[in-house]
Image (cartoon, rainbow, N blue to C red; front, side, top):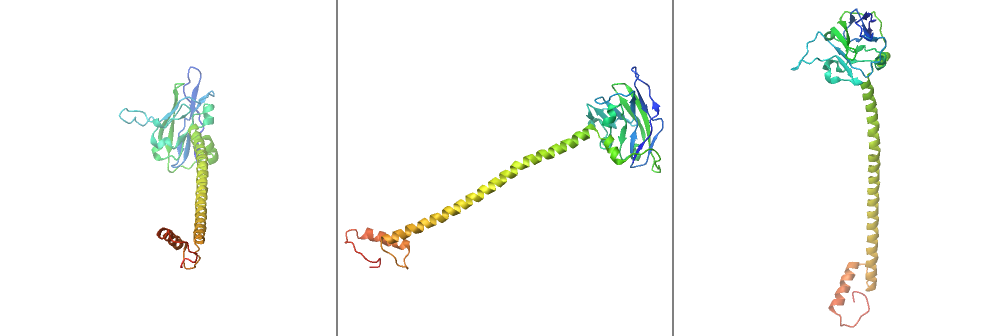
Length: 257
């Protein structure tokens, strides 16, 4: 639930006639509520690209340099998280559409008792500021204007959040484009490996067949057809015969004669 109080307090104007309109009444919410701290420039003024600072004047600066830590800082068209308190980095935002109209209202999500206190809105370019009081009451029951969750998400989307979402989507598509050629390469290498294995098996079969033909041809040449003799035996006996008795007359007959 978003708690929104109608702004009705006008703060000092600039020499150009611009001034901030805030709320003269406290913004009251229960723990866990989402609240909008109203603040806008009048007359309508384009705040896109301008610096907007939200701080808590009740809190003292911390750190060795006593630097002010902000609730929210918008500059250079994005959220400057380095300047913000850690507890508010994920819970605060401005409306991009509102900035175009000079609406610099701050949304705080999931408020707690630690959020109770004064909040200050400051626009350095104009030199004007406004203060509002947030009261967090555990017994509070809202009777003020509320807004639906879907509408709230639309008006609190910041430029940085839009960029982050677009970047995640683009990164996902980029990873998909990178995976496609890798998958195709793996498939190609697998097919090539199968083809090589098939070729090697085929060559091995052809080689054995050729060896068998050569053995039979050798056996036939020396007239050895006995079923008990192998081609290796025929080759060995034939070679021994040719070496041992080169001067003897030629005899025709079986290998056993």
